[in-house]
Length: 189
Image (cartoon, rainbow, N blue to C red; front, top):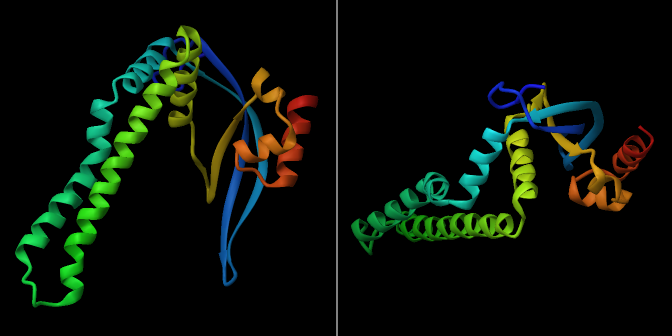
């Protein structure tokens, strides 16, 4: 099988169950309609998995890239605070502190998430960490949309086989009836 990411021969093969979610908005709010899709096989090569694992273990570049908009908001907030007069329009005066606060909170969340993921993967041993990194590569490269529906994937492996309906529902954000169908399909084949 070929790598979903780069097309090279793959070492990590994942059997997944596709879940299609359609978000419907009406006057009463938003509802989700879900259906199970096909059972698919995706694969990721060792090179792509190792690159992802390296990104996770050294989160600096990724944090800089994802934190840049928040840093820009912080800088804009500081500029607005220093340039706007104190007697001007109240809405304009509040934009500076609001932008600065959003920038600070966004930067803090980005840094916290990067270090949390590094710690989480640091606790995993060699091959387990590579397999988890390969799964993340798969989730990034696999299709996310089919028409108007969002696509998510449930891995069919021994960990998933040990889960109950409620666990599937919580972990994969499934509706109760879809969790029951997924449970039956995963176990009965």
